[in-house]
Amino acid sequence: MKKTILIADDDEAVLTMLGRFLESENYYVVFARNGVQALAEFLIKPYDLLLLDLTMPDCEGWEVFDALSKLHPMMPIIIMTGLVGQQERAARVGADALLEKPLDPPSLLQTVRAVLSRERPARMARAASASRMGAVSAPRWSA
Image 1 (tube, rainbow, N blue to C red):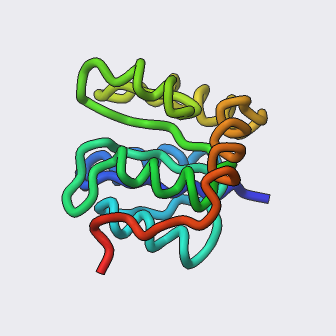
Image 2 (cartoon, helix red, strand yellow):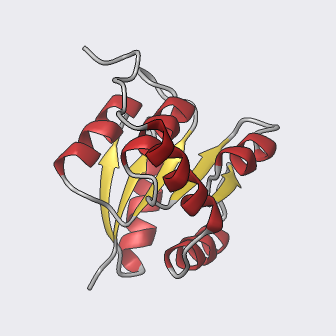
Image 3 (cartoon, rainbow, N blue to C red):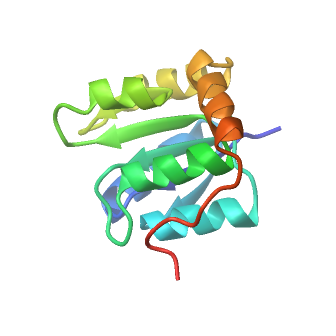
């Protein structure tokens, strides 16, 4: 069965390039053009992987990461960013991987395959943290 990947990025060129590339590798791809739309997608249906840009309108990527870590702590998340110095934070909060833009398609594919093929201790830690926190409060940007 095809794995479904949600790509959250506000750059249409990035969405188009990643979508075409990942579809050619037999993945089903859905787009979210901002952080709020990405979170809304997860309320509609589950995804196998999230490719998450950090700089988006409405709700920045780290806010999306924090909310999804509470709602779906076992969700594999790969951070994509043009920002420098994000590796330490990504490792600290339990991101499965961080890829710097501009993205290299072969490296992206290798990372996607690796993340989808294994359970990560970081996801287990996110799940444990989410269960200790109990009820999830609404993010600050919600209506």
